[in-house]
Every structure is written in C-alpha cells, then in structure tokens.
Image (cartoon, rainbow, N blue to C red; front, side, top):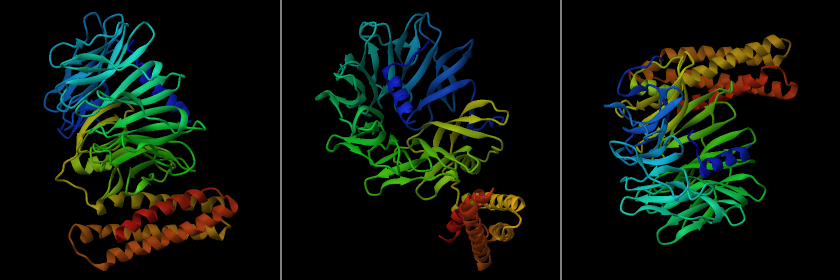
Length: 511
C-alpha cells in the first residue's frame, strides 16, 4: 500500500486542530478512470495524478487534451504508482510507486519510472518538481524509522537536508528555480515546525505564533514568500506569511476562531485562505494594501478556497447556499464571486444541469484551465478538464440575473410558508405581500432584459422595474426580520435571508 509520510501527518494534525454524460470537446472533457489530479503544467495543458487500472490498483498518468491519458506504468515488481508533481511544461513527472515491497520516489522523463533511491531506509516520496525539471524535493527514510527531507538535482543527485534537531523532516515545495525549499521538521523538543532551506543558509526554522506547530501550505514561485498555518499560544491555528525580510507574520482574522493561508501568488503579493467568523468559515483574499477581505458565501454560512492562479486574480473554491449545499465558485476582481458551473456553461457552451462541482484540483497559471472533480446526475464522480474561452467573457448583467431570480423566488416561497404557519401576524402577511410584488416586478424586468442589455435599448423602464423589485424585497426583508427576531416564528429567518440575498444581487444592477 502506498503511504504518505511526515508531511501528510502534519496536514492531518492541522485538520484536527481546525476543529452529465460527458461532453466530448476540447474545452470540457472527462478524464476516464482518473482517481485524482494532483498537479498540472503552468499552461494547464498537461496533468498528472492517479489512474484507476482495476483490481484496486492505480498508476501514475500523464494527460494532455490532444493526446488523452497516458499510463506511465509501475516499477518492476510493483502494482501501484501515483504522479505528484510536474515541471513547467509537463515533460518531467515525479511521485511515488511501490516496488512490490516498499514505497519509492520516482522520476519520469519519458520511458520507465526511475527509482530515486533512499538514504538507507526502505521508502521515499517525491513531492514537487521545479520549473525546469532539474530539481525535485521530497523525503526519504534514513533507517527503518526516521525520514529526512531531500533535494534531488540532476547534476548532484539527492541531498539530505537534515532536520531542525528532531528525528524527522519532509520537503513539500520549492521555488521555480529550485533554490528555495520549504517543508516541516521536528525540532529538538518534538514540536513540528516549518523550515526554509537554501544552499547558502541550510535549514532555517521560520518561527511560530506562540504554539508548537507550524505547517506550510504554499510557496511563491519566486521563493520570496511562504504561507500556511501556525498554532498560537492557545493552540488555535492562524494564517501566516513568512518572508526573509519580515519573518513570520500573523495575517489576522475575519472574526473569532482559527484560520489558515492556503495559496500564494507567484510574487507573494496575494494570498488566499480561510478564517472563521461567528457564523462560519469564510474564504479570504489578502494583499498588503487591503489586508484580509472576505469573499463571502452564496447565502449560507461558509466558504473555502481551493485554488488560485499565478496573479491571484482567479480564485476557485466552495461556497455554501442557504440550504447548506456547497457550490463551486470562481472569484475575479471585476466580477466578484460567481457560480463556477454557470461560468463554464456560458463560456464553453455545455449543459451541466444535474452536475455538481465538488472540488478544483489544479489550475493553470493563467487561471483559464482547470481540473475539477465533478458529480454527475447519476451520482457517479469523475475528473474533468475545462478551458474557459477568453473570447466569450460573460458580462455582469448575465451572471447576476440567475441569482436575482433564485433568491426572489425563494423569498416568496419562504414568505408563503411563514404566512401559512402564522396567518394572524401582520408582519408575516406583509412579508408575503411584498414578496409577491417583488416577484411580479422581477418577472416584468426579465421580459425586457434583452432589450436593455443585449439590444442596447437603454430605456429607464428596466431599471425602474429593478428598483421597484429592490424596494419590495427590502420591505419583505424588514417585516420578516423583525417578525422572526421578536417571535422566532417558522420560516421568518429564511424569508429574511433570501430577501437580503436578492437585494445584494439587485444592487449590482445600479453600479
């Protein structure tokens, strides 16, 4: 069985603390039998991960839109392998494969999987490849128990990076040029700490926020900035940024509770992650100029980021709806947060009715190419490749219209239920009445949307109807909010929440 060593244990520790039928087209393509995508090339046109080959076994693979899926096979005597990382153009792949007895790190550059060896122990794992494919980092066992981080270079072989004084270490990431490495190591007193390693300075402890545990989750391509989560003195994980000049910095929070930085841009200027608020976790985007900014939700309590492109102007994650389901989102500065499935439908021209995007597993540096885990209408789960067409950008008026209609309809439905459960309340009756008016104005506005936006007939009638709809949703919100706050009546809170969401999207019509 393939196993993940120290770094995976560190991730598990952090998690505990943070208590369609396929459309065969270049832009939207199913990856048959792929179990997971671990990483893609810089342009997003090559990917690697694990391919299901039957019998409980899986192989490392290499995918391209033009060539499809290539099975990279296994080591002699082995049955399993998995790709973990690749270089900038996808010509070099590294990962882990068994030899029939132990797990071994491999390097692939065409042909067979090449065993990268160990430091005398039985197992090793290659985790990350730099841009030119000439540097690989990971960890290898030095005896039957202990594991050390390594850097492999084409001209020097494997270099043992040692530890921070403890028994184990593991390298996770390196810069594009391969000169900066980050990972985790136990120190002399048994605490698990993040390290930064360079040829000149060796392994350095980046420090902590007062606790005993620090985990790196990202490194900028230029090697200037590492990000992750560090326990404070009370055992709560907090998001951090590390730079050589500034050391370890607490990025702050959006409210009470833990958080973590997840991804960092190529130059270290943009960071995304999540932070707990009083109502739930929120995805955030951080910059030096603006600090930590919440990306919000789809009306529910929580949101989480999963992937970010090189500039930090494409962020993909999951956001909760009022019914607590999680939908994938794409955030961009000019549009804010949009339903990723809807963006794909508009950009690529596919019908994804009944599909649900479960995760974004890899993203290109431009942000336009992604590898997604998707649940089909029949509840089966597959990996998909998508390329968003740059010439089919979605205008603002097109993306918010579905949400306006969704929340307007939801307001009316909840208001009707509230009125049925308590028909004697004037507040519930007024909320229901205003919700009906809001739906009427909304339907009328939708009939002339095409004239206003697509046919460029800029009459005031459309905006007048939208403004009237906004007013009705506002009055429905007020009645439902105070009705629910005073009596805790059924469906009052749901009515107020839906009306507020409708108002939020309606407000974008007047920007």
